[in-house]
Length: 588
Image 1: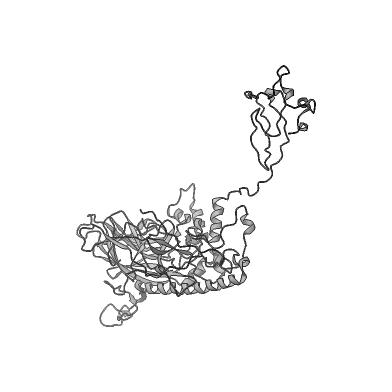
Image 2 (image 1 turned 135 degrees about the horizontal axis):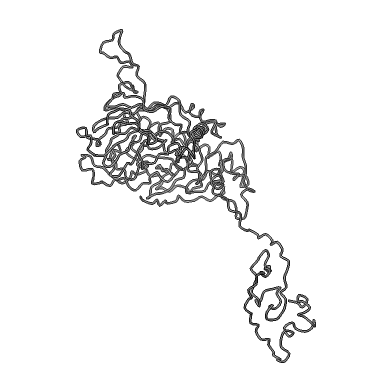
């Protein structure tokens, strides 16, 4: 500190030290005594803040007597005034913290990125201190593309066939001849994510992995798409539980056409004593949004029939239908009819931003390891608030009937499929049509988990799934064909030898009532069809990804990473490949 920095009252002679003027003249000391700071007086006027000499730095006003730069003495000990500086606006700190974004904005950005649950898409986050707005590339009129996740080359063990889950026998039910098992060592669909077995393939070297099946190789109850409290037999057709209502979906989904399956009640209402409680069974169809810990028909995404009084249930609202209970030994048949996918897309076109592009199936998924097994992890379609509000409408003071009807006219989730219906049969006899104009299921009517980056795209697996719910010892067995215990009286199937026309008598007469049989397909046929569709999607994705990589390599590093959803599909050949992650899922 120079003398010019001191006030005149403190310096006196410019050649004299500043500290000697403040010492007593009667005591000559070689070293000045330490200055003891006085207790700070309680003043209502705060002392001015002193700016830190560091660039852009600030700190609180120091106590009197503290050795701060640009300060002279202490007011109480030396009677020196405190030098103050005009407070300047601090310089911006280099690499300072950015303003935090709201959760809504983060969800929107994640949805635009289209990330996966466990891996960030190619392109990665922006560098620290760099605004995302400066690096974002807005690409218009480009259809959404396949997301790319750089993975290391598969290992030899990744080419091995997938193994079925481990079956652990359970000690109940005691009145059953069949043995039921708990399936372990596999993940279950929950918390917004969906899992499918997969393996590496040398036939698609760019895509590297594809879905696969585990035995038994047939349409059955899905091991991954059931409640963890559902127990199955070895065939995967019979199910039970000792808990409250739990549900299980089949491993095949229905998207268009006419399909039929039947379900036999093994243990439920006793026909000799209708008041005896032996468990309960519900049968129907459900979408992927339906929880597996509730009975089918509980929400707006499922339709079912209950064994008690033969009532049909949708959105937890039972309605009289059969007027007789479904008891032990009864076989309930369900026929679902859905319009073509082209019709469904036309209905939802006004609500979809992607309707201007050709229809496509895009599967955002990444392989993971769980218990030394490979699975594809993808986003599951989740319930939306509008459908929950329709199921549980608020008080009239909060939500009026007119506002609810307006919402139903402007929301894609409330659109229905014309001509769709579910027909119920009991022991081969047609009871009637239980549900009509089912809710549409194609995106945007179905929405994935957007907070993690899910995109409202069709992944090829959205649709209605055969679903069975059991309650406290209730047991049921599904039959997906092609042979039936009770063939439906007015349905004809592929390969049937029975005539197309039936009459009310053995002999044809002029007054006979002729009924033309409708054509339907056994759900077992959907199993092979679904595998064929998935193989086609793999080939299309392999070619698309290979072309994108070639184009990215020709463009070089500057043109490789040009944003998600571009014509290059976000391919970046310079990004480091990563090993498949081992997942640890909490057991329930």
